[in-house]
Each structure stands twice: as C-alpha cells, then as structure tokens.
Image (tube, rainbow, N blue to C red; front, side):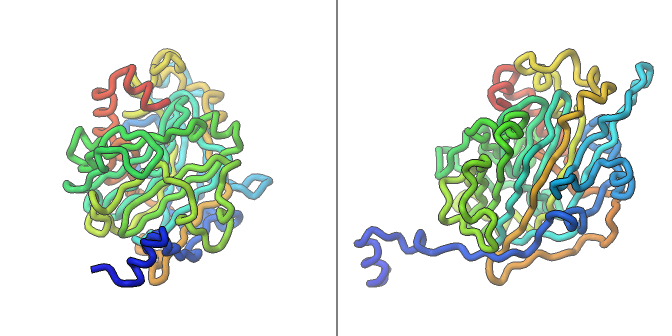
Length: 375
C-alpha cells in the first residue's frame, strides 16, 4: 500500500525512487604514479590462440610496454619495435595482461577515462570485470572490440537464468543478443552494441577519447560511454552521481538478471591480444575489406602496432556506504595463472569460453552481420 507521502509525491509528479540520489565515495584510484600498483601481470600462455607473449610486470616495464608518459598518463602497449623473421611461423609480440588485486563489490561505480585505446588490423584489446570463480561469479565486459572497429560493445556472461530484456529498455545501445548464459551459443553472452560512433578505434582517439562508466548494484548493471566533450560535470569529482546522468548505453536490470545471485566480487582486467579467435577470425578480420590478407600476415611488421596502446588518465572505483573494495588476490605482482575473460565469451581467462563465444559470433552473424556488429 502506498503511504500518504508517496501518493502526494506521485500527485506532484515526483517518483520517490527517482528522487533518491546515489551516494558514492572514492574507494580505489589508479592514476599517475600509483597506476601500476596493485596488479597481477600474467605470464601464462594466451588461451585465445593469440600471437602474444604476456610479460611480467618487471619485463613489461623494462621493455616500455607499461609506463607513465610525460603527461602523467598510464600507457599499456604491444611491442612495436621487433621485426618478425619471415621464416618464423610462430612469431608473436610481447604484450600485457593485468588483473587488479582489489576486487569490486556490488554497490560500486567504475570510471575509466582514456585518451587512446588500442586499434589496428589484428589488434584485440579489452577492459572488463571478472569474478574470481567463473562462471559462477559472472563477468562484465565494459569495452572490447577488434581490428578497425569504431564502436564498443558490452556484455555479461553468467550461469543460466540471467537475461537482457528482449525489448528495447532504458538504454541507447543496440541489442545484439539477450541470453547471458555461458553455455548459450558458445558463450556469446548478452551483448549491447554502442550506438555512438567514435567509442572505439581511431575515431575514439580523434575526438580526444572519453569515459566509460559502469554502475554495479543490486538493482542492475549500467554502462555509459561519454565522448570527451560530453563528460558529466561531476566526472572528476570525489562523489559522482550517475542518477543525474543521461540514459545509459547498456542496462541489465535486476528484473531479468538477479545481480546478487549471478555476480560476486569482480577483478578489473586490461589486456591486448593479437589475432586469436576473435580478431583473427577470417570473417571478422576481413569485414569491410579494411584489413589485408590474413591476420597472421601483418604480425611481423612492427609498424602495424604503432596505434596498439591504451593511454589512460585514470581508473577509479567508487563505493556506496557499506561497500568497499577487497583484496583477496595473491600479493605478488606477477602471476602464471591469470583470471581474466573478455567480450563475446568468457571463462577462466579471456579464455576458453571466450574462444567459443567469439567463434559463435563469427558463425552467427556472417560477414555482413559481423560488419554491422563491429562498426
């Protein structure tokens, strides 16, 4: 039964829930000199069939694959110096896969501010959240795509029972698939494609980059993309309020996916892969005729990777009252057993489930469909 105050509020045109402001305070900040503190750097073989060798933190720093530039921004990149020998059929590039020690709880807001994201033929970057016990604790793919794509896409990967609503909901993105179950369509995930151009690739860099925000609460999961010129006024504040922001790009409400049931604490993952099951799939790599030949043809030329880097201004985690980040990962900054995954699929790593998912995307959409999905 509605209370008298509630009925009065409705009569005056106010919704009692809409009037409630989300309260967030800073819980974790990766920025400037502290950006590369608190991560595991995987040295395990890539499980996505990519032509990469992931480096320890010490090796990545020595090779300038991770560093702070003269602006104080964090750079994460692929080796763009080594020339592959023509006779070397197994040549791969040194790269980075880093997973946060701190884990994000339900009741959090994650802000990712970047000036540049990796792109180029064969390049496969990803920024996502991953539960420690996959798929039981779920996965949230915040931004990922491949090659010369211009639009980001978002997805969830869970146990059976989590869905994206089939009809257009309170979001601006384009629904690609609705079942988040990791066993559906080879772990395709429930995908929403960003409707704004310049959310990925060269266009993202041209407009000065921008920000991706992910709100992770018991009411649902929301993802926003803001080009640099449209960042919210409280983007750099110590207590941003997403209730005042415009409609999100993607929205996964708890009415069709019980967040506390399907998601546990999440680690942050950043990585750059080369070719592999997604970027290297022929009908993805050759979509639109933009990338020449086969994916493996471009790997040995270091100039292919001059744009294969993240330049990140900050990555911040905010928490609601009573919520905090926790650190339950090993305290070492290097790891031989990564916990990571990616978009279009996911498993214990941007991994076997991910491989199946992206392979399924290739089969389901075909050349024309995949071109539309990527661009």
